[in-house]
Amino acid sequence: MSVQPLTSVNHFLDLTDVPSEILHGMLQNAHKMKNSKFTPAQIFSGLSLAMVFDKRSTRTRMSFEVAMKQLGGHTIPMNMSEIQLTGAENIEDTAQVLSRYVDAVMIRMSDHDTLVQLAKHSSIPVINGLTDWSHPCQIMADIMTIEEKLGDIKGKTVAWFGDYNNVTRSFGHAAEIFGFDLVLGLPEELHSKVDISANQVTADASAAAKNADVIVTDTWESMGQEGKSLDMFRPYQVNSALMANAADHAIFMHCMPIHREDEVTNEVLASKQCVIYDEAENRLHAQKAILAWCLANAGVQIQQTFDFAA
Image (spheres, rainbow, N blue to C red):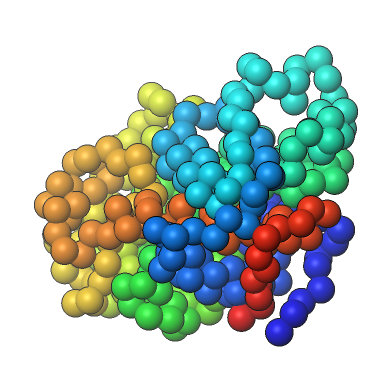
């Protein structure tokens, strides 16, 4: 089954921007790419990806760089002090110049509006590596991991604990697209911030974990938030008592970096339920599938095509 491109350029900015059948197709391709990770197809031979960062990065930097290179392409990593995006040059000029030099841009930055404006003026794909608003690449890897461990995510219950942030928001977007239930265990003070659909939003951590298939949390202190009070989050620590409320087959996920003994205990991290390293690896394979879809309609010739509709 073939699908028509969204526009002349396939940007990957938010899950809500991409038709659900294409997202399902990307995940199928991610599984295929993982199965052939030791013999990767050289589909990006001669293509270049610019990677721009204004935040520290381990998994995003490594996964995109390895993904592009394993598939035959090249990368150009830059931080914000090396590019004019937020300097003397306006966004349109930067976008137009990047479009003449490289075949795609992945950017990890705080300001989502700047990302959107960059994509608006680019004639090449722009990929959201993370903004303060959303983190769609992470969620694609997370869903891939859930599918590996538990089968089809449709109808499953994902329970989120702690802070309300960009990853939570992208989980909310994914819940509507992929048909799983999302439960949020959050401090009462954060309930008014929730701007996604969730099956339940509760201050009762035990109730949020009840019979969940997936228990997931994130750091309570994201980059740029250092020094904020963490006291309100302590009742939402993922520990063995919280995990005991979940289904017997439940898995624990965390996108990392982890502050051990804050948002999650060492006991949970050492348990068989913890799949954080599989989750981290799957960033690589999900990124490959995202890049393949973005570049399939980028006006360049890739060496192999995939069926991006499920």
